[in-house]
Image (cartoon, rainbow, N blue to C red):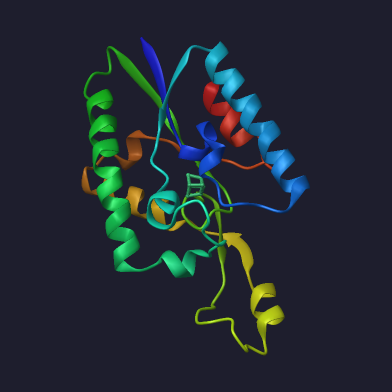
Amino acid sequence: MKKVIFVAHCILNTASKVVMYNKEEMEMEETLRKRFLEKAISNDVQIIQLPCPEFTMYGAKRWGHVSNQFNNVFFKNNCRKELEPIVEQIQEYLDNPEMFEILGIVGIDGSPSCGVDYTCYGDWYGSFEEREDLDETLKSCKFAEGNGVFIEVLIEMLKEQKILDKVKLSSLFANEPDKCLSLLD
Ligand code: SF4
């Protein structure tokens, strides 16, 4: 029986990530990403890569966003289009349980798109030019419990297919490494 796991795009391809400046945070995530992939490969787990909705909507030079900004019908419809073939693949693996076991889907905590347990919020918009409250506006960004928008759409689609309870959702988060690593046991 083949074991398969679905992972956020940047678990396999960090070139898709928004450019980050917090070195300590980046190194912690990178260490866990490598531990996770090494464990998956040594346990003979097949890895299926989800699309990166931010790279395909906003490209490599995008700014950092918060989930409030992606919570709109256009971004969500794009997520839905990108996720359709993924949900079909999940369905096909589930339909053949004698051949396959789906270990789960792994997102990236803190991401406005791919957060599973945590995402980031901030109620800002508009131009930065001549803005007087820029520092306060940027500091209002909060890391808090909740789904990123891409994961929210994925959950909706799995519910529509009545397969949400058949797939474990988890996430890669350096402060809680067991969440993703334990899926591979
Ligand atoms: S949108 Fe998701 S896959 Fe893309 S870089 Fe962000 S967390 Fe990774």
